[in-house]
Image (cartoon, rainbow, N blue to C red; front, side, top):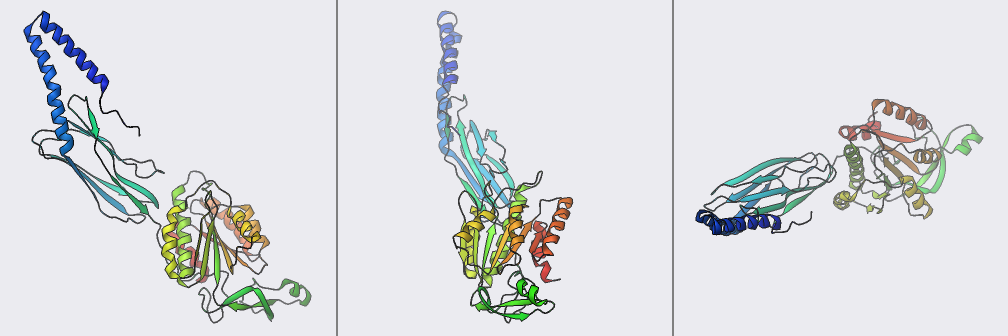
Length: 409
C-alpha cells in the first residue's frame, strides 16, 4: 500500500482560509469575530499537542493462542489498544493483514476514538482449513489529530504461520514390492527384487502376482512361468507428484490440493519409516526434488512441503520421461500421485504393464462427482484387468482406508 503523506495539505488550506475570513471580519466589523479568529489559531496548536501525546503513548498488544497451528486448527487472536492518558485519543485507524492470499480474506478495519484511561479490544478466531501461509496481525495503525490535519503511522507487526498438512500413518502399503523374501504382503522386510538382475524362472502358482510372468515363454510353453530376481539390500521407490491445478469445475481446489499433499506425506513417511530409499519429484516452474533413506529424513521432507505450490505446469509423465532418458531414475517401484485424468500418463501405465519395473497410480478424486468417479472406475477396471495397479482415493477423510484397502481384501 502506498504511504499517505503525514500532513493533509487540503484540510489545512481550508482551515487557513476560514481563519483568514474570520480575521478580516473581526478587523472590519466585530471584535467578537476577531476573538473567533484567535480561537481558530490556538485550537490547532492544542490539537497538535494532543496528537503528539497520543502518538507517543498509544500502546497495543497482540496475543495468539498458538505458535504452530496444524491444518484444521483455530488460532485465537486478540488485539488490545490501551490509552493511559487522562484525555481521549483523537483518532486511531486500524487495519489488519490479509489472512491468506488464496482466500483474500481480511479482518474488518476499525476507526475508533479511545476514551481516557480506556481500551479498545477485539478478539477473532482464525480458521486454518488448508495448509499454506497465514498472515495474522496488524498491517497498519494510523493516528490523526482532532482536526485531521496530521497523521502518523505506528510501527506494527504481524505473525506468519506455516500451516502444514496432516501426518497420516499407513500400517500396510507396498504395491509393487510385495514379493519380499521372508516378508509378507504389504511390509517390506528383508531384501527386495533387483529388476536389473534377472536370475531364473519358476512355475507360476495360483495367488502369486502376475506382474513378472514371462509372456514369451508362456506363448511357447503354454503354461505361465515367473521371472525370479536377485535381491538388493535396500529397496528404492520414486514418487512423481502432480502439481498442476485441478481441472474440475466448481470444486474446492484447496481441498483437492491438500488431499494430494497428504497422500504424498503418508506414503513418504511409510517408506522412510521402513528405511526405503525414497525420491520425490515434481514438475513446475521450479523443480522440486527430495531424496531420503531413513526415518530421520522425514522432517526435512515434511518441512519442505510448504514449497509445493500448485500451478499451471507440465505433466509428471514428462518429468518421468526426462528422468528415464537421462538415467536418473533408479527405483524398484514408481508411483504417480495425481488428481488429473491424464491420458498420457495412463498410456504410459498401459504400455508398462508387462515390464520389469512396477508402476502404481494413486489417483486423488476427492473433487469428482459420483458420476465422474463411476466413469473413472470403469476405466481403471479395464486397466486393472490387464495387470495395472491403480488406487483411487475418494476424499481427505478416507486417505488411509483407500490406500490400505487392497491389503485388507
